[in-house]
Figure 1 (cartoon, protein in one colour):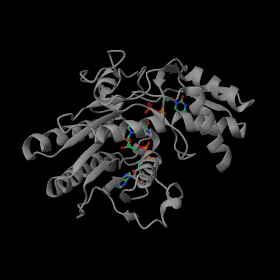
Figure 2 (cartoon, rainbow, N blue to C red):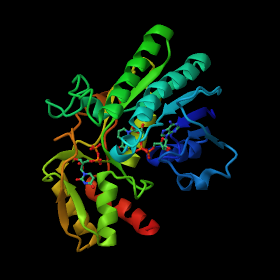
Figure 3 (spheres, helix red, strand yellow):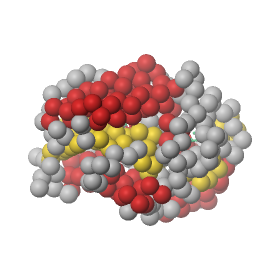
Figure 4 (tube, helix red, strand yellow):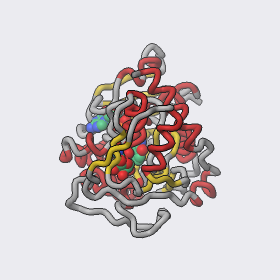
Amino acid sequence: MRKKILITGGAGFVGSHLCRRLLNEGNDIICLDNFFTGDKSNIIDMLENPYFELVRHDVQEPILLEVDEIYNLACPASPPYYQFDPVATTKTSVMGAINMLSIAQRCKAKILQASTSEVYGDPEIHPQPESYRGSVSTTGIRACYDEGKRCAETLFFDFHRQHDVKIKVIRIFNTYGPAMNPNDGRVVSNFIVQALKGEDITMYGDGTQTRSFQYVDDLIEGMIKLMNSPDEFTGPVNIGNPNEFTMLELAEKVIELTGSDSKIIFQPLPQDDPLQRQPIIDLAKKELDWEPTIQLEEGLKKTIDYFKSII
Ligand code: NAD
Ligand code: UDP
C-alpha cells in the first residue's frame, strides 16, 4: 500500500537517501526542508516524480499536513553549522519535535526521531548501551545540539505516554557517504576533500580520539526497519557500526585510498570534543534483525568516488 510519508530535513545528506529509497519503494513522499544545510542538488533527481513533493518550511513553525508516517531529521548535524546559530539549533530540535509530534497526534501517524549518539556526550562508559544516561555539558558549545536532541527524546516519550502517539527513537552514530556537503565540516568529508585537493589534512587534537563510522546505506536500512517494527518497540535504539577508529587511522586510510600526498597538520581540539564513541548494537540485532554490512574501506571508496565526481 502506498503510504504518505513526511521526511523533515529531506534535502540533507541522510534525508535525501531516505527520500529516494522510500520513493523507489512506491510511497508518496513529502520532503520538508528549509535548506539551511541541505541542498536541492541532493534531491534534483526526484523533483519530476509526481509522488515526490518538496515543501520549503522551517520546522520551528507549525504546519498542517496529512500523513501516515513521519521521519523527523530536520536539524543541522555538523558542529560548525549547529554552532553557527546555537539558539536556532535548540529551537529546531525542540520546537521541531513539538510541531511534528502534533501532526502525528492529529493524524495518528507513526513518527521516528533522528536522535544521536551525542545524547551520551563525552561518555564515561565505553562502548555505549542505550541504558547509559550520558555525560553532557549543559553549558558548552555542543550543548545546543546535544541538549536539544535530549529534550526532543523527552518530548517523544511524553507524547507517547500522554497522547498515545506511536513513536520510534533512533540514536544514530557517525554516518558518512555520498551526498555529504563538501563544506559540511565533519571529519570524513573534510579529510576526503582535503586529500583529493592535495591540501593539508586538518587533525583536531592529537588524533587519538575515536569514532565509529557507519555507511549511510546501513543507516537507511536501520531507520526503515525501526519504522516497520512492532508498535510496542519504541527504542531508543543505537544504530551504528561498532568498528572504532582513531582520527589518525581514518586520515591514513583516506590518504592511502585517494593516493594523495597531503600531509597531516595538527590544530587545537574543539571544546567538549568527545574522546571516544562506539555503539553497542545488541538491541538493534535482537529487535530489528539489523547489523551493518558495509565496512570502512568499502564505504570510503564509494564516498571518495562521489567526491571525485563533484569537486
Ligand atoms: P544535514 O545537515 O545534511 O541534514 C539536515 C537537514 O535538515 C538539512 O537538509 C537542513 O537544511 C534541514 N534543516 C535544518 N534545520 C531545519 C529547520 N529548522 N527546518 C527545516 N529543515 C531544517 O545532516 P544529516 O547528517 O543528514 O543529519 C540528518 C539528521 O540525522 C539530523 O537530525 C542529525 O542530527 C541526525 N544525525 C546524523 C548523524 C550523522 O552522522 N550524519 C549522526 C547522528 C544524528
Ligand atoms: N575532526 C578533525 N578534523 C576535521 C574535522 C573533525 O580532526 O577536519 C575531528 C573532530 O574534532 C572529532 C572527530 O573528528 O574529534 C569527529 O568530528 P565530526 O565533526 O565529524 O563529528 P562529531 O564530533 O560530532 O562526532
